[in-house]
Length: 453
Image (cartoon, rainbow, N blue to C red; front, side, top):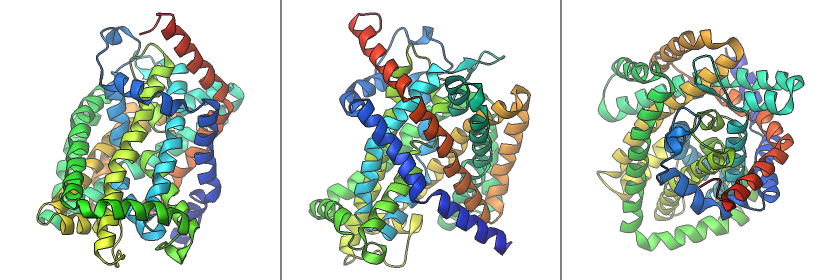
């Protein structure tokens, strides 16, 4: 077993190494320039699509609204990475890692936009009248049948990753958090979270989107408000914290080995892991949206990266660096979620730790819901519509198992397969970038002519 773990650690290190990170971030940089910084020019309009009212939206093809599709995507992306991942980046890369997380997100918005455009462009209805879409479909339908092998690889990695990063790992995180904070046994948590997961997952995308549309805004706003209270209660630390983030990003101080490379490596890696730009998961939810044009949904999709990293991860990062300053520029021996809980509790005694604890619980639960849909669609691509119920039952069972077993090896498998999803997806984005640009221009022209709102 130890030999298998050593092999998986080596493989995971390679998958999440510099070559993959260059491919993922490089795709975002490439699309940013090809689209002439579209994500910055169109961001206000994009948020209007998410939160505005569109009377004709219900008449468009799709299963769920723009808002519901975004919440479904965010349910899977806003998770433990926003809490534990940011802390790990800060410990291993120093405060400067936060800056590189921001840079990853800003370019990642272009990637998410491209994913959303292609997801809608190449989606199709299944035999039940529901939308099927995502990287496996835009690889096969966009690049042609000769590329189907690449689509199959993506779908295989997506299915396998869902049982780890989507279900068992998340339920394990909830079980441990509840046991440590409330003293409730993991078996009790396993039963409760499995039942609640089953009630939502068995209802399909409409049920998942409804639950996500309720849970995600509440949990995100609650966590952000808790962080803002800490920031406003310690305003004297805000400017020093921001100065440290920017200065350490280019000096490498306080990073592992004292090198700037550590700040870049861990900032980029954790940023990608948190917002999933380039991973290929979010476009599966984007394909279900009711929309009149691929570019409109692409704009909605890219706001997810902004909300996930520029808003939620920033709250965590700034508070952690404030704690770093208070502790004499040291994070101590803690890391991950434990460090975040400790710093929040220190800066907001009696309340801060609970903000993070409940954030972990709801973030992880929402990730279980979002990833169930991702994995289901990947499995459906491989085995057909008849596999849906079987997949859902196995997925729900993995939620229970995750609560009651040790998951060190599962973490490695999940992390590896999650990273491997990015390679076929980014290849497709680069090869289909011309279509992304074409759809963007078409959207602008049709809006100017009054054909589209």
